[in-house]
Structure formats: structure tokens, C-alpha cells
Length: 436
Ligand code: SF4
Ligand code: SF4
Image (cartoon, rainbow, N blue to C red; front, side, top):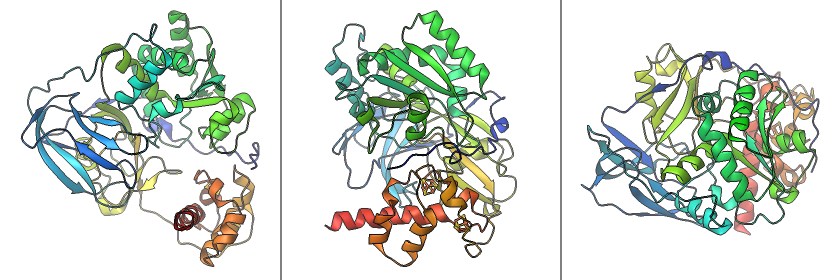
């Protein structure tokens, strides 16, 4: 495995100014939310409420039955209307629980809070599992799993980098909730059983760095420090961040080099769960891009429909057909098939770009995709192997190491969708492994 930094990290225009100066807007749906039940292929779900039941914010709605189960809690109060299939970010329609909102929006404590100062490691891990907390950086991996075995961990890294263009949800969320953030970091520090915590923030956000430092001092939080990292892409990728801060490398998972990485918003959820018994109900999500009339960060309940949010924000610049929607940022996000997709528990951004895709041209063999790949891969060769349907060659070229950062497509002068081909190679290799 190679991880070469320097020329393989790229400064790309951040476009953060579209949203980072304005206040987050707090929005509510007019009628219903649709809470996605999808948690990865083959995940079974046990629904715990009956049609017609009244539920509150914090009512436990369902349990997932996967290798790493997590419960799902209600983000609103109202009447549970049943399950319906709707467009989903997984590209296939998926089941969603429909809740018709009531006027009062009553809240209940989702679970008993836990005195983390006196709790054992195992009690804390079990608590986070029961709280249904999943990573807020986009992947949605259950948080408790990272903390189950901490014997070899010596450093916790909190990823507040947000290196993707347009996205400022973490920035805004921390600025609005810095006490919860630092408090949550302290709880994670205890659960990881480490002294050393590094909070990675881009050096282009000096206000955020100073704000967090002040709160760390106010809380007298020993061992926690903010590290200002360079404004290059993909600095928010785990491998790049760990290497930049600690000069360590790993093969498959950060735990192999003694590190746990968690996203900033996850720390805030942890604080609210331990202190108040709150489950995740509302999310900060960046709605940005040149395809929107008024880009801004929003705080919305999980399950609110993207089309309704965009409507409440003033709509698209032109018709929906003239824009491209991406769940996430433009580099690593996924193209959305429809704006009827709903906010799920791990979503942090919807990027809306003008539909100005350039036509693909012939490969110039310029080698730029290879020169910029942070994983030291040769994306064009993997793409060629995909065209030839040669899975052995895809494997030999290390396709599975791709972190899907999007840089190879970004730098390609021929506008070739190189990243998409490498993603396809990964899917083909996974299918091949399953068949075996
Ligand atoms: S998307 Fe994958 S192959 Fe392309 S530059 Fe990023 S890591 Fe390399
Ligand atoms: S950057 Fe584009 S044109 Fe250049 S080698 Fe890679 S795929 Fe070909």
C-alpha cells in the first residue's frame, strides 16, 4: 500500500463562502417525514410500533438486525402511518417509515442518560450502541464498533476538516454548539481510554480553531488539542489525516496504527445522548451549489424530503431538469436520482450544481490521474481493465484501495469519469469475492 502525500494532495476551490457566513435555517416538514430503514444490503429491520400509534421525538421505532445492530428513533412526534418505498441514495427504492406530524412536537427521553465519569468502558460502549449513534461523516458506520476493543489505541482523532468543496455543516454545527462538541470529545476520549486527542481543522478556518481552543480551556480538558491542517484535498480522508497529524500508515483500518477517527457531529450526538438521553432527531445539512437560489445550512429532522427543503429555501435557479443533485459533496458524493430522496441519519450535504457536464474525450495518456491519486494508484489503468472486463488486472492494480476521493476525475483534462470506473472495479471485485 502506498500513501504518498505532497503532490498527490491538491488544493481545490472550496466554495465554502456560499454558506459559511449565514446562520443555519431551522426547517420543519409541512406534513410528513419518511425515515429510511435502509442500513446496508441484507439488513433486516424489526419495527417496534404499530400503524396508527402516536410516537414522540425519541420514541424507539425499529431495530436493525445486522452484524452491528443499531436502533432507529423517531425524529418527530405524530402518527405512524406504515412503511412505504421511496427513492433512496442507494439508487434503489427502499422502505421508509412514514410519520404524519402533529402540532405539538412532543419529545420524550429516548433512554436513560449515563454518568460517564463513573461508567466502565463496557457500559459506555453498550450505551452508545443502544443510543443508535452512527458516524456522521457520511458512511454511517455504527460508532460503538470502533470502541469495542481499545487495548492498542493511543490516539483519538476528531475529524472536523470538511475538505470537500461546498460543505460547511460541521463548521456551522460546531460554531452553534461548541460546548456539546468539546463535551462529546471528552466522553469519546474516556471511551477510547486515551490521553491524546487531536481535533483536525483546516487552517483556513482560524475562527473555528480559536473558538474550539477557548472551549477546551474553559472545560479544562487535558490532552485535547486542535491541529490546524493544510487546505488540500483529500485532507478529510482518514488515511491522509492520520498521516498528516501522526505520520502513521495502516493497511485496512485506523485501529491497526493505534488510532480511532470520529467525525465532529458524532461527538455532539454523544454529548447529548450521555447527558440528556437524547437520540439523533435533527441534522445539520449543507444545501449548497450554483444550482440553488439561496445556498445555506439547514437543521432538519431526519426523514424530511430534499425537494421540500429546497422548496422552503426558495428553489432551484431554473427547473429541476437544469441541475445535478449530489448527496454529499461534488468529489465523493453520489449522484441523486431524484429530489424525492429524504435526509438520512448520516447525510451531511446536498450539493446542487448546474447541469454543465462536459462530454468525455479520448484519454490523452497525460498521467495526471496517476500523479494526483493519494493512494498511489493508476486510475486510468484500472478504468481500462473495467472496459476489458479483466477483474484480475483490476485486482493487480489495487482497485480495492481506492478511497473514492474523486481527484482522478477532477484533474482529467478529457473529462473522463475515471472515479466512476474505479468504483465499478471495486463493485466487480466485491461481487467476485462473494461468488467465491
Ligand atoms: S478516486 Fe480512487 S483512484 Fe481516483 S484519485 Fe481517488 S483514490 Fe485514486
Ligand atoms: S487524467 Fe484523463 S486523460 Fe490523463 S491519463 Fe488519466 S484518464 Fe487519461
